[in-house]
Image (cartoon, rainbow, N blue to C red; front, side, top):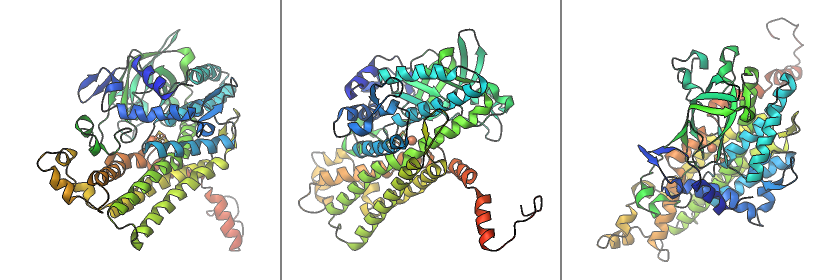
Length: 486
Ligand code: SF4
Ligand code: FE
C-alpha cells in the first residue's frame, strides 16, 4: 500500500496532459489550483497506515489474500459495505472536503459485478480480463477516476441520433489489438490526479447504440487523452492568499475536469464492454447505487466539520448559549445523522450478486442520496443563519495584514475578547468554503442529479404491492385480470 507521499510522488512521474485557465499545466503537483485536491486524495492513502483508521481503510483482497487499501476492494459481505460508509465519514472528518477516490472505487466494484454477468450470458472474457486489471490496481494501490457522465448534447436524442456523434464516448474502430475511442466525459471528480480512468456508459442503450455501449480502462497519461480542469467558486484565492481559502490544505470538493478521448487506443485486455448494449443500463445502475450509498458517509463527515465550525463561530461571537442557536445546531446534527442512518441501512440491507460481491439496497441508497441533495442545503442554510452576514462581506486577508488599515480590520471584526480576530476570520472562511457555490452544487448533482434518484425510487417503489396492501385493508375485492383497476 502506498503512503500519501508515495502517491503524490507517483503523480510527478505521469505525463498527464492538463489544461487550466487557457494554459497547459506542466507540474500538477505544485499547481496551486490542483494541489489541494491532491492533498485530499493523499489522505485516503495516509489514513490506511494509521493504526487508528487501519481497520476501516484496509481490507483483504479476495483475489490475492493480500492486505490492500479499501479503495481498491470489492465488498464481499454487508460488513464490507458498512465499513465503506464508515471509512468515508472518517476521511470526510479529516479533510472537510471531497477526497475523490470513491468514484473509481465504485467504478471498479460496479464493473467487477457487471462483467461477470456479461460473461455468464454472452460467453465473453471481460470478467477474466477485469480481474487481472483489478489485481494490478490492488497491488500498485493506484487511484482510479470513475468516468460515467457524457456531455449528452440534446438530451431528447439517443447517442447515435446526436448531430455530433462524439457527444457520447464511442468506439470508432475495432482493431485486432484493441479499439479506438472518441468522445468526452464531463465533470469527472479527481480525474487529473488519478493514475487510471475507468470509463462506463452513461445510460441504458438500445440496439442502435452498440458503439456507445463501451467500458474500458486507460492510463491518465495515455496518448489521445487530455483534461480541462474546471473552475471553482473563488478559485483565484488559491493563487494569492491562504486564510481566505477557508480550507487551504484540501480545497473545495473534487477538482472536477472534462476528459477528452481523441482517438485514444485501448488494448482488448482493458476493454470490459464492447457493444453489449443490453448491459449498459445494468452497469449504470450498479455504479449509481454504489456511489449513492456513499453520500451519507462522506457528506456526514463534512457536516461534522461544518457543525463544529458553526458552533465555534457562535462561540467566537458570544451567542453559543442562546437557545435558538442551540436549536439550530440540534437540527444540523439531526439532519446529518438522518443521512448517516440511510447509508448504514442500505449497506446493512445489502444482498449478494451473482459474482459473489455484495450490493447495497438500491431503494434505500437512492433515497439517501436524494436526502443529501436536500439536507446539505438545509444544513448549510442553518450554518449561514448562525454565522451571519460576515460570510459575504468580510474584507480580505490582505487588508487584515495591511500595515496601515490592518488594525481597523483587527479591531472591528473582533468577537469575544479572548479570541484573536484572525481565528474568527479563519472559521468564517471555512464555513464560506463549505457552504458556497461549488460545494453545494456537488451535494446536489454528484452521484447523479435528484431526478436520476427519483426515477430509481419510482422503479424500486413497488407501488402495485403497496396498492394491494391498501385495497386489502380497505376491503376492496381483487379486481379481475384485465379490468381497468388491475
Ligand atoms: Fe467520495 Fe463523497 Fe467525493 Fe463522491 S463526493 S468522491 S463519495 S468524497
Ligand atoms: Fe461526488
